[in-house]
Length: 401
Image 1: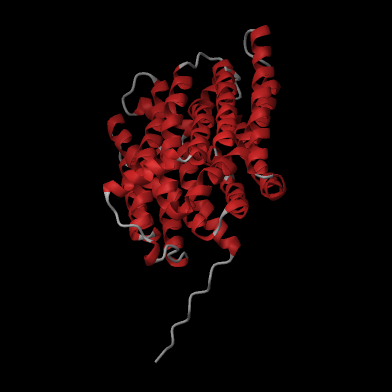
Image 2: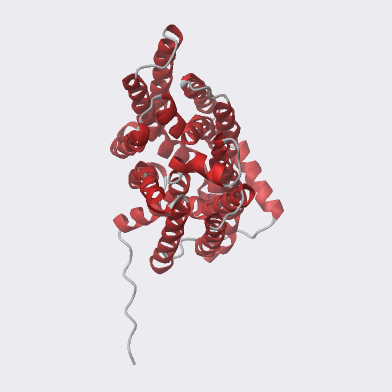
C-alpha cells in the first residue's frame, strides 16, 4: 500500500501571492480592456463611444451585489465552497463577454463577472482576517496590495497588445485563463480557514442582524464610508483614463505607460506602508495621506482656476503621482481599520464593508464621469472633496469610538 505524500503547507510568501492574485482579478477585469472601451461600445452597436464607460460601471455594480452574498455564505459554509462557486459565475460571465453580439449581452456578462469576482476578492480578505489581526493584518494586506498593484500597472499595456493582435475579445480570453489558473491554484493549495465550530447559521435574519451590528459600530461604519468616498474619484479615473491621456493630453498609445506609472506609485506606497504601519499606526498614516490628497487638490485646483485651459502635462502627472501614492497608504489601512472590530464575523464583515464602500463609490464615480468635459478639473475637485469628507468622518470616529 502506497502512503500518500502529505501536502506541504503554504509559506507566507506563497499565501501572499495567492491572495494577491485572487484579489487582482478585480483590477485585471477592470483595466485590461481600458484601451478598447470606445471600440467595444461601437462594435456592439452603440453610436456614442463614450458609452464604453458603462463596461466599467456595470462590473462594479455586480461586484457590490456579489459581496453581500459571498460574505455571509462563506461564514456559513466555509471559505472554499464559496470561492469555487464564485469562480464558476465569473467564468460564465467571461464566456458571455467573449461571445457577446450586442451591448446588452456584454452588460449581462460584465454584471456576472462582477458578481463572480466578489467571492475571490471578499472571501480572500476574510481568509487573511481568519489568521491575522490588527497591525499584523495591515502588514499582510500591505504586502498583498504591493503584489496586487503589479496587475493594474501592466494590465492596460497587456490589453493594448492583445487588442492589436487579436481584437478586444482577446482581453476576455485572457481573463478566462487567469480565472482558471488562480482557481486551480487555490483549490490545490489553500486549506479551509473557518472551522465548523465557528460557522454561523445562514438566515436572512442573522444576515440583517450582522449588517445592523456593523452599521452601528462607528469604527466599522466610519472607515467603510471613507473607503467609499475616496474610491469614487478613483473609479471615475479608471473610466476616463483613456480619454484623459489620449484626448486631453494627446499621449497616444503611451497612455498605458503613464497609467502604469500611477499604478506603481500606489504599489510603492503599499510597500512603504507595510514598513511604517507597525510604528506609526493606521490612523496616523491614513490622516497624513488624506491631508496630502487635499493639499495636492487645492494647489492643483487653484492653478486650474487661475490658468484656464489644459494644464502642462508634467503638472498633471505630478498631482497624479502624489495623489495615488497617498491612495496607496489608504487602501490597506482603511479596510483593516474597518475590519478590526469584526473578527467574529469576518466573512459578513468583509462583505458589508466591501459592498457598502462600493455602493457609496458608484454614484460618486458616475457623477464625476458624467461631468467630464475634456477637463481634469472635476476629477481634481472630486479627490479634494472626498478627502475632506474622509477627514471629517475620521474625526467623528475618533470622538465616538
